Structures are given as C-alpha cells and as structure tokens.
Image (tube, rainbow, N blue to C red):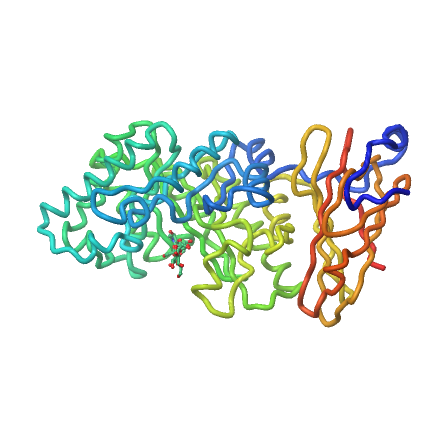
Length: 449
Ligand code: G3I
C-alpha cells in the first residue's frame, strides 16, 4: 500500500499484467466520439473558446471531437473591432489547435446581424458602400484561412419564423441578393471550402425551414455556390422535432450537405436524473437522425461542457445544455451521442442515494490515461469522503490530485484532501489521477464510504 498523493513508482505492473490475463472487462472502455463518428463516415464537432484550449478542456476538445467551430472568434465584431484594424488572435489559436489535433474547422460566421463591430452598425452607408464593406470582409477573412476551413457558415440566421426575410443591416441595405453575393465572394476566396447557410428553428419541417429550402433550391438553380445547410438545433428538453430526419432528407435530396451546427438541449435548473435521462434521449435522437442520412455530414455541439455554454446567460433559470457537466464529467447526454454513433458504453446509473460518485476517463493514450471521479450530493451533504473501486484489467494509479489515493493490488482507495472533504447539498467535488493501462481499460464501479 503506497500513498499516491505525490506520485509513485510503477512497481506492481507484473501484478497488473497477471490480472489482465484473467479478469474479464465489466464494460468496454469508452471509445472517443470522434472515432465512433469516423467509423460512420461522420464528423463530430464542438464550439470552442480559444483561450480555454488547455488542461482538461483542451484534452477533451482534442480527444473527443473531429471538428471545431469558433464560438465567437471569427465573428466580424471580434476580428475587426476597429475599421481596418484586425485581431485574429483567437481564431488563429483555434485553427492551430485543430491542425495539431487533426481536426476540421467550421468557420462561423461571415454575414450576421449580431456581433458586428459598432463602427459598422453605427455607420451610415449607401447600398454600394455596404456591399463593398461586406465583400471586403468576406474576401479578407476567407482568404486568411484559405485551406484551413472545411466549411463556412457564410450567412447566419437570414429568416424570420414565418419564413420571410429578417430585417437586418444586410437585407435592408442590399435586398435578398446579399445572400447570393456573399456565397459567390466566399467561393472566389476559397473554392475548396463548403459554403453553408445556417439558421435556428429550421430543424423540423415548418415555414422557416421551407423558406430555407426554397432559397437553397433557387440558389442552386441560379448556379450560386451553395454546398450545405446548417441546422443549429438549440433545442428545449423533450422537444426534438418529429420531422427532423425527414427535413434533413429533403435538403439532402436537393443536392446539398446538412450539418447539425449548434446542438444543445436546455433544461430548467436544477437538473434531475429524469431531465438528464430525457436529455440523453434528445441528444441520441438528433445524432441518430443525422447518422441515418448520408449527406448529413457533421453533428456539432454548441460547447461541450456546461461551464462553456451560452444558455444560462440568455435563459435565466435554464442550463445544463451540453454533454459534459461543469466539472468535465460526461453526462448521460454524452452517452446518448455515443450510442447513436454505435458506441457500446453504458451510462453510469442515476444516483439513487443522496451522494454518488461518477468515474470517467477524460484522456487516454497508448499506455496511460487520466481519470477523474466526481462526488455529487443532492438532498444530503458530506464532511469527509472515501471512494473505493477495484480495477478489472490491471490498471495502476501512478499519481493523484485533489485526493490521497492508495492502491493495493487491484483495490483503490481515495480519501479527500484537507481542503475538499465537504460536499454541500447540491454541490460536487472532483479529484483526478493518472494511471497506466494495457489491453483494455474498463470503467470500474465506485463505492462511496
Ligand atoms: O467578451 C466579452 C467580455 O469581455 C465581457 O466581459 C462579457 C460581459 O458580458 O461579454 C463578453 O462577450 C460575450 C461573448 O459571448 C463572449 O463570451 C457577449 O456578452 C455575449 O453576448 C456573447 O454571446 C454569444 C452569442 O452568440 C451572441 O449572440 C455566445 O457566446 C455564442 O455562443 C452565441 O452563439 C450563437 C451563434 O453564433 C449563432 N447561433 C446562436 C448562438 C447562441 O446565441
């Protein structure tokens, strides 16, 4: 028995190897979402914030996803806050991270009515000036990232709910022709990038999605370069449209690709086992609808962790909209995506007691992995805690943090550090560890004592 609070040597690997030969895996190790998606010919993405792409956030973004969308970094207001003065820092950072992790980038977004620089929105422009500004913006940004962007959300949110054009700077100043022009200018700057129109509340068959359908059909008939439609999919718990797959299919039949570009499923807080289970079903059915249509190429979540979601700031009282919780533990929704992509992982059972422990592998490489355990309480609290489990395939902990861990044979015992023994009602603590593995890395069941 050794203390692992400050790390330890790797003795015990012989025991680990022996166990490997005899102990059957209780569960298959989680296969990263990007590998599952790839096996189905799909891309799985997430919106990201560039400054957060280190540590656990970076590990998950790199390991689980095959596409990144800058959540804000490529919007006009970010890249040209002062006319003629550009800031590409965060966008460059995301593109570099994506290259290093063999990921696609979805560029977001070139023409929108939100998050434009104030010099643009406060200016007085003739129609000709506005057209020139837009053409220069598109040409500058698309050219800068030529070859780096798999797909651009060229035009974002052009429609009202009833299918009429939204009254915006662009529509009011340039008429509906701004859409065809924007696509044409983007194509001239990077002929290889797939060009999309992206909108929300167009997931099911309705007036708005039919307006988008009619627009795409007329653009194609006119020879305008349009490659795809983005269905944002900012959904409300339990409200996945029944016609989602049918709608995806009708766009595919028009001859364009489809992407789910901004998937999240918001719920009233606090989350419960029941709402998280419904959310799992919702993520699963959206992912499955895309998986079922050949031309649906990408499912992107709008932030993968609840700590990086736009929802609580926009819908007070609502949140928990993403597949990972605020401590980076995968939620049932994560397993919904995984299962829809053919994964065989099992969802950790909902907590029946007042406090529960959830074990997850947050990063894994050829011989080692980083794991974490989150202890969460609801209707109860703890003033100290002990988490125990038995490894089924010879895994060996080498280092732990935010807990003191000892391992004796396959049996692991972790107790709270001096500063995190208290888990309040409604709160949680997370500790982490590095460990070695070989052959398989099944997830053990953690018991709280
Ligand atoms: O960067 C400033 C920061 O300096 C300041 O202290 C802080 C205080 O409010 O604001 C920060 O800017 C915020 C920005 O996100 C970056 O975090 C803005 O206030 C906030 O309005 C902005 O929200 C973004 C929202 O678009 C704006 O409409 C969200 O992050 C972004 O996720 C969201 O994304 C959109 C898609 O682009 C299009 N579809 C809908 C989707 C959700 O609204």
